[in-house]
Amino acid sequence: MMKQAQKTKEQVFEELLQYLPPELEQLAYDFKVFVRSRKIKTVPELLRVVLLYCGLDLSLREVAGHLTLLDERITDEAVRKRLKACQPWVKALLFEMLPHRSPTHLPEGLRFCAFDGSSIQAPGATGTDYRLHIGMDLVTLEFTHLLVTDKSTGESLKNYPLNPGDVAVVDRGLCHASGILEKQQQGADVVVRYNQYCMPLLKEDGTSLDLISELKQFDLERKNSLSVKSFPVYRPVAGTSEKESEEKLSGHLMVMRLPAKEAKEARRKCRRKASKKGRRQPRVETLFMTEFLMVFTTLSPSILSPKALLELYQCRWQIEIAIKRLKSLLDIDKLRSKPGILADVWLNGKLLYALMLEKHKRKRFGDDWGYLNQQRIGTWWRTWNLLKQEIAQMITGVNYWHWENWPDCLSVLFERPRRRKLQTLPKSVRKLLTNYPDLTVGNFAIISSG
Image (cartoon, rainbow, N blue to C red; front, side, top):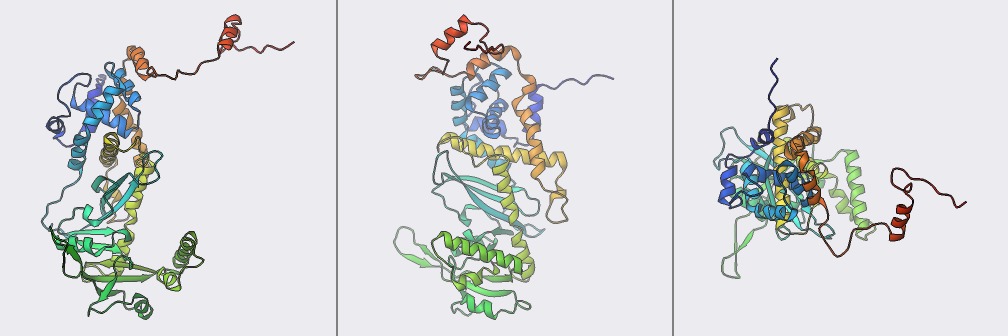
């Protein structure tokens, strides 16, 4: 049998390049990331640098060591400069890798997407430095939106692009009439956990909604929805201090009483939260409200029944799991440096690595067995964890290291000259080891005082 020819490191790495947009090299030239070839001779090799640092979390000096073993000597400072120049390129690649939907209404119907955010802190920080804004298709569980912003950008529905036919399924932190109204005017719909403190409601006849009284009168065996409106939404007039009134947001409030066990747990959490704030007991009304799952939606009950819509909202948990995968398996919450260009490159590069891992996983194992529109047989968690090891070998090229380059590699890895010298044994101890050769590492002898 003819022996199969061994692949080169470039051919192995090309297995990952297939998941990237075809404009990979052109974008590098457009953003002037790759102007001339010196130590890093090709655009794919530059991408390897990004993945070593951002995906595999190697230090700058370790990245330089890998590159030295693969080709020729390069310093960590040279790696730092190339990485910082990659900032716009990495962001563009991340955007191009996400699925893009036509702004027209798709004939197959609605697309349900969950959205959520997560804060990222730099080492030693006490507050938020960056925010991740993440979207996910609730059928295929593919990422539809990945955005990194600084701490000045708050969590809002306005951060997520929606097209006609899209339905955003979001948590109570995004329950604001202005954001929901904006998405409704764009032709999209919203399903959001209701927060009475952020968005007080009116009845359909325009009178104020007393939610406690309404819930006490609700016959949940017969009725699960209530047509409601928000208070007028005001928007500042450009160039003036005046505000103009906009139309009220119309929608439906879906209500479901939690099972006894879940209601008891909800009341326990409510009491614990109150005690942390220094209050002995929460208000009776607050405890009563915890017994209900309330969801506001702009979708008509004729499209989805109240029961189906409440069950749909509970599927939002899938994006929480996805964020946990990013944090637990890829350490995206462990920012490598202080806020700045390098930190921004690392976060966007980490998301790029996550998308490549996601696409590689679907190619290896297929993807329909994990869809939410059928009975699932497994989750993505273990497949991610398994394929990380395969992808790591493709990125590092460890099987193609030039062993004769080890002296240069060690030179790159060693500490640079600095004021504080590396620790050594005291001079008297070193002299003792010289006089007594037996006192050496690997042939240590114990000398008794007798």
